Length: 298
Image (cartoon, rainbow, N blue to C red; front, side, top):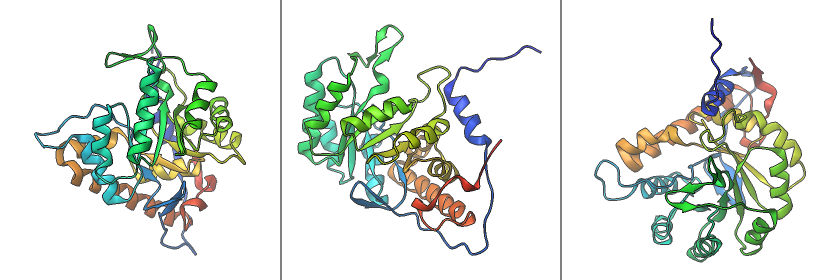
């Protein structure tokens, strides 16, 4: 039988996540509470929206998909993320009232980076950040929707952190080495991610989470994880392995496309209900209590 190699990081990630099993601890447990405190604010659950870009109007509705899921984030009281867009579009996101983090691409035009971060700051964003996993492409520097990207140094990232009083997020961290550099520059949060498998054979974010958690011990840096998160059990595993919160991504797209804001609200409420159920079944009363003591690795 011929051996079939699998380079698709998304498939590798799904297989790893599904290999993690959960044992029960029911006696003396209670109905779990999913609320969290995160960077000085209170949220209903450790679930956040993804930093999507380029979502136009779906199914003929007036608002863009980005606006629709931002309105859902407001209704759910969860932290909202958006990605690549121009300033006028970000203004529309802020007008939804959602507490939103703007993730800016590493443009070769550094003036554009700084302009977009400043605009977000002045518009009332919850935080700003950079998507470092779009620095490189197969031809060298990446090109995204016609925009050339550029290498980002520690000093450059430090300058972004120094330019704002908002929490700074670095998206695309997939090693303890980069995590420590983010802590050193004063980033308040990192998003552990392989950006839906841009790197062949990329380590599953959940697999590298414990290493990153250990590397950041004693540092004031929150850990978010994404890639393949689509259920409450997935969020539970992320928390158990060291994340503070998890971001759902493509799993919510069918609900968004079909039903808009209502679909996203119902989908994420379902994630929350399953998370509460799994926490209750494993003896964890609160989100910060969750650890890996109920995980088994296949």
